[in-house]
Image 1 (cartoon, rainbow, N blue to C red):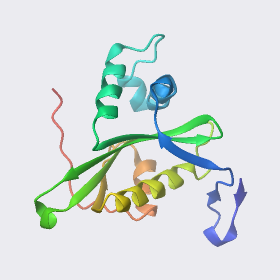
Image 2 (image 1 turned 90 degrees about the horizontal axis):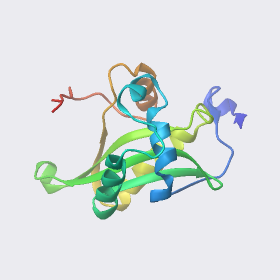
Image 3 (image 1 turned 45 degrees about the horizontal axis):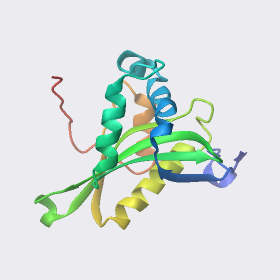
Length: 165
């Protein structure tokens, strides 16, 4: 990894990162990444074996052509994950949009630029699928994540609301 002065001190990733659809064998690593922060520890269960709910969710995502669970790999090691959901809308003249959810990188690579590569890859994927809009949400407690997305050009144009069931 190097610091490139053209990026005003931003650390950039010099390692080869590849992207692919997640496999069921990646599930343990994915759940561990989802649980690896203050909020994730409150809602995820990293056990051996994992709760069956994770396998069922993985299968539903894997079978849905409008959902993609994407992993970022450094060599053969999974170092990032994100879920991309493609949704048709009547608004915006019947266009498609992509929602990015569950973005995580391994704590071992945070700050190396892999997160930026992941989002840039996802935006390109949205273009490939003919989307006119990319959207995401981040928890209000994740101030660093909000700043990260803003640096990548995202704007907080709406107030998101949720109802837990």
